[in-house]
Image (cartoon, rainbow, N blue to C red; front, side, top):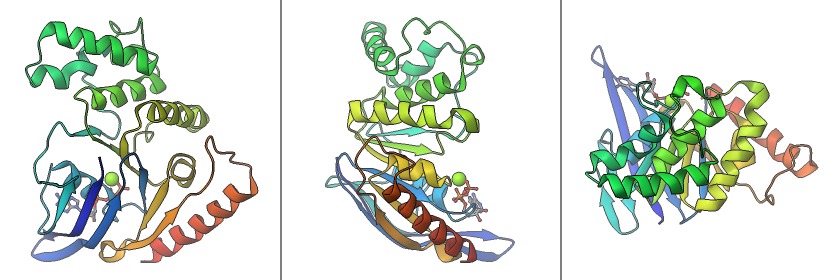
Length: 250
Ligand SMILES: Nc1ncnc2c1ncn2[C@@H]1O[C@H](COP(=O)(O)OP(=O)(O)OP(=O)(O)O)[C@@H](O)[C@H]1O
Ligand SMILES: [Mg+2]
């Protein structure tokens, strides 16, 4: 389902001083599109993503999912938190179907859905392990399918690979792409990593630090799976690097 961000504005007050974090943010995200919000620390990426999720409200503007206006959290939007936020006292399996448990879905239905999600994430046989017993990539996949458990229309991810060390990133990026290609969900992902944005997204939205503006809405016309050594990729990477430098200046 498509997602529309319409004229979103958000400020925070700090010691009586108003700080505008987002201003006149408009975005139209098509059904099945993978869109990344890229920008320097503090530019308002998480704020925008959590407004879309309904975790906090905006002073101005609206969010539409399809034709429906949304202002509160709902099962139609799945969320992958930075650092995964898996429950350390629950097994992989219990973590994955937790959203269904709080929705009151029966044990039988939960078990059925769990098998499907374990299969999708390549986690079969690991459902009884605890988060500290699995690798970073497996944690990432657990968080991903937990967000899919309630069968959301849209998947929102805040730096989903933020905790993955550099050597593993390429591999995990490919795994994430594969998972997404299987689900075909609409995705909004936050990152400040240019390669992650370019490798995964159909569109990269570059945000600037000053007054939460959108600096550029860049389409990535490269065929998947992308070759990070190709000339077209490197050209886009150069363009994004320059844009990010501008974003840092404001
Ligand atoms: N609850 C809050 N109260 C006051 N200020 C806030 C609050 N939440 C965010 N901010 C401020 O809003 C700005 C944007 O924060 P946000 O977390 O959206 O940035 P970000 O782009 O996600 O940064 P990062 O890449 O570091 O995660 C920052 O200046 C931050 O200090
Ligand atoms: Mg953030």
